[in-house]
Length: 147
Image (cartoon, rainbow, N blue to C red):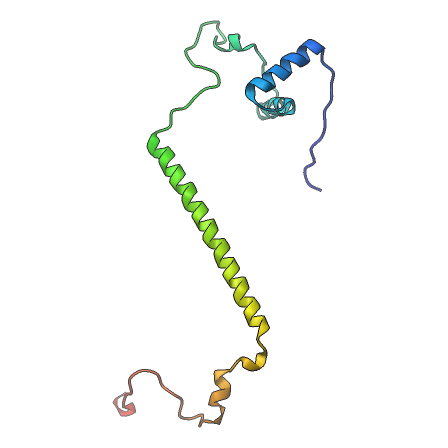
């Protein structure tokens, strides 16, 4: 049995429901996603999540104001972004080549299946009427006495 999602239901007042819906609209996500994000955060931090109003987030635990915005932002160098975009394009190109190769292999297999086994000539069958002691040699000839 695999992981199955479970449904949790509970009741909230109309006012709190409207507030939660506003939060979801502000974040441009569904109301269910708001709860999933909260539950994921709660599980990830072992139940040590505190929900506080946004205006209180800018104050640290000791009541002093911090200069960081919420959510925290990280500056990424342009070279990193360009390299990431290049790698995405290369990966897309390689996926396309792989699909093209798969189609080609499938086409070859279909063509092979269409031909009868009689059309296949085995080299061993051609050599059957030749003397076994004098095999063909590919490449330059050499004198056996020089060995």
